[in-house]
Image (tube, protein in one colour):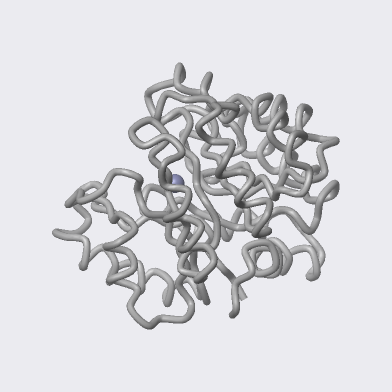
Length: 266
Ligand SMILES: [Zn+2]
C-alpha cells in the first residue's frame, strides 16, 4: 500500500483549466501509481482559483474515505486567533494535523503566535508539519525555517510529533545532524526526488544516503509524500524503491508510518 502524505490540488504549468479538473487529474494519478490514500494540503490563502483552500478541499473530497486534509495556518494575517476553529476541525477529524509555512510566510517556527497551536496539537496528539528549505529561485527564504528553530520547538513540546518536509534542502546534511538526537522529530520526503532539489543538494547518491541514514535511525518516523503536482509521484516511488530497504522498512515508509502518525483509518 502507498499513501501520498503531501499533495496539493492546484493548477500547475497549465496542466488543467480549473480546480475540479486538477482534482480529477489527481484521482487519475492515484490510480495510475497505485496510491491508496492521500493527504491533501490546502493553501493558507483562501479563495484562490489556482490552488485549493480548506473549504474547497472539503467540498471536492466529498464522501471519499481515502483522502485526508491538514489545516494550513495564516500566522501573519491572523496570529493565534483561529485556535478554536482548528481545535474543532481536529476534534471532528476533518483535518489530521496542522501545516506551518515559515519561509513562504515571514515568521519563525519559534514565533509566539504559533505556540498555542503547538500546545493544542500536543494535547490532541496530532502532528505539526513544517515546510523547510529553499523555494525554487529563492534561497533567502530558508532562513525562516532553519531546523535549529524546529529542534527548539520539539524540545519545548516533547510529546508533540514534529514533522519536517523537504529536508531543509539543499542543506540536508546539516538538517540530519542537527535533528539526529531529537526523538520527536519526523521526516516526510516530499520534493526529494525533484531534479532541482537533487542537483542543489549534492546529487542523487547524497539524497539516498541521507534517506538511508534517517530510516536506519528512525524507521517508524519517515513518511512518503510527493508535493504533486509540482513533483512527480512515480519519481518519488522510484527513489524509495532504489534504497534497497527490507520489505518491512519499505512498507513503513510507504504507508504504515503515515497511518499511525496521522491516525488515518485506511
Ligand atoms: Zn507542498
